[in-house]
Image 1: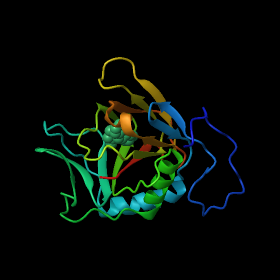
Image 2: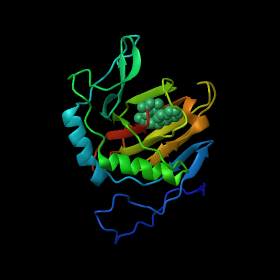
Image 3: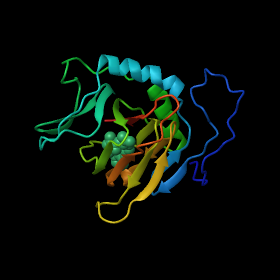
Image 4: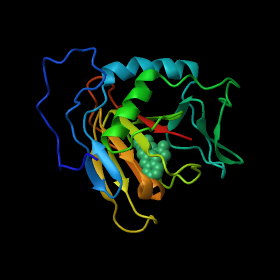
Length: 228
Ligand code: MD3
Ligand code: FE
């Protein structure tokens, strides 16, 4: 298992890299932020993934879902893969079809699958094969309130999360929302992997209001890839 050198940001970009490469920095090692939570900086490439995301959201448009309590979620979402996470008046669940269109979710793009498998493998989770991808879209100031992802059928598999565009502050609590979170700033291309004991911790996201990303401006996409 590859472990945890404390790597902050690295500025040694390889300028000779072929543009066709899927991964921007295959030499980045995972850093273990807290138990079973790994961060790999700059693994994903926005130039590669942006057209793929565009294709997904053309087929299954971003939408604001509502909580079972009737509140509108703060960020818009969609899904791709065999199963998609949805929030409805009668609860949260994974569904085979987009409730807006009645159609199956768009196929899991190969670029998403390969990236997630690569990230998981680097963190010691060989054999991960995601079949569900939640696409979250944040605009400046929008945030994801601290929560647990509880309705997960299989906790033996990791979750891979890919940050694209504007940066965000990610907050990790423990098994309650009390106390001070461990915080990390996530930049475009950063990938996190959550395993085992970290699957039930409280976590939240706060976006920056003022620092636009050169390509995406004040937009952030997060891909959450799961095997469900
Ligand atoms: C930790 N999304 O959609 S995924 C979410 O930036 C969510 O949009 C974050 O939290 C975002 O639920 C990043 C990070 C993540 C996802 C699932 C987890 C962290 C997790 C499940 C258990 C523990
Ligand atoms: Fe979550």
